[in-house]
Image 1 (tube, rainbow, N blue to C red):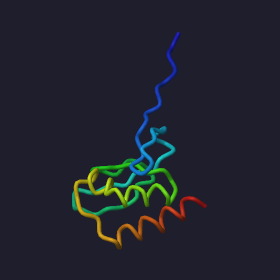
Image 2 (spheres, rainbow, N blue to C red):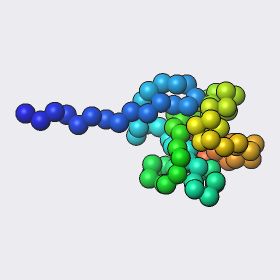
Image 3 (cartoon, rainbow, N blue to C red):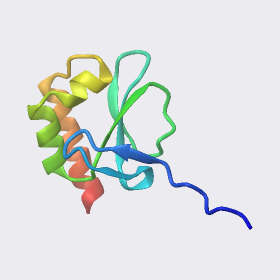
Length: 91
């Protein structure tokens, strides 16, 4: 009898809930230092995960959790870009 395949889980940087990796959106810092959303989960670089809603992004921003996870300072323009991309993916 085979065991059911274990679903990988990740913690949301905003609400700190553990959820299946497929339900979360990865924010990645590329080796060049560029920060972007990784919808495929395959881009190379350091990653952090967020629930696909703007509230979790706000919580992560307020507590500077993304900056800690990605080990870099994140400018306001990048947060604004992430927020617009997240809102588009919610629809």
